[in-house]
Image (cartoon, rainbow, N blue to C red; front, side, top):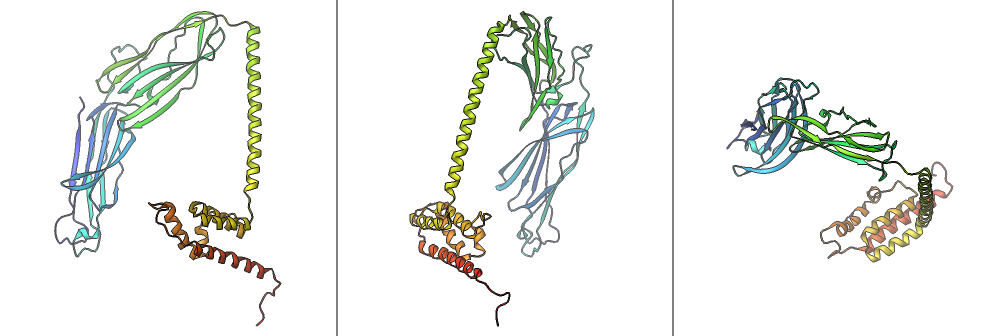
Length: 430
């Protein structure tokens, strides 16, 4: 039976240096809840921390959640709004998973909370932002020693506390026929709930039958965090090789574990399997199939290389065709304005500006606004047509004004370039 302890504090503090003319400051609501008051070593304890902020509060801070003599994992943070006495409070809920390392106590440090309110909350004469505070006092959980297994004489039993544990196997057969001397990979997958996957014993006694050998690989761990705790998976690969033909029975694999919900020892078992190994194909057949696979692979590789070369040539041709002169881009802008294609107008204007100034670093329209402020107002109108709720409906845009502004920019640039090409002295004549 799970026990719950709720530490709920609501503190009301006056603001520093503020004079309240009427009423009181709203509360800062905090609570800390545990799904159990005592647990065994490395047994998962779920802690739920809730913080409720009144409307208008800002500058929210609090000291970190700390637990001594324990491993701490942050699971999930959730934000929601809930009414408290008809006041909409903004709540932040954070879930933690705690695992005690040694028997004794798990000490939870005090947590201090602070938030600021608008100046008006301090009263009509207030000149500073009132501060509201709250604190969760230190708390301790009991960590019990590991309980004895049903078979106390079995020294191979390893302590493993979890909510659930399952074992399954998967074979990576590359051929329908398993022949002597041909290795095949078997993956034993252990899924565990409520525990870190590193706690799962990876040194399994495979107990291979005579005529078959096992070569274990490196175990792979994966971890997923959810609102209810940790969920891990351990994949243990092993290469199995038979030295002769025959029928081989692979023994079952059993992992004892402690059920943290039922409060008792349990065990999960992977059932025994029978593996049939028959004499392999003739050598001539083997060479034929290997040659066919090799030829097919070479044909596929040649097709891929030919497709890549074709795609590259098409890309190069497309890039060559896409390079337009400044004059061509200028004519394209005029056509785009007449057709009122506003998204394309922005792209064409950027391409034209790069060609005009011969500057590839121009990638945004706002880079032109410093030198040409009038463009900002004109393009803000096109933005309304592109990103507004009505899109192009009921939109009136003075295209002549935009053409005139761009024409002025173009004429001024060519005029400055013509003047700079003339020979002049370093200083003008007086």
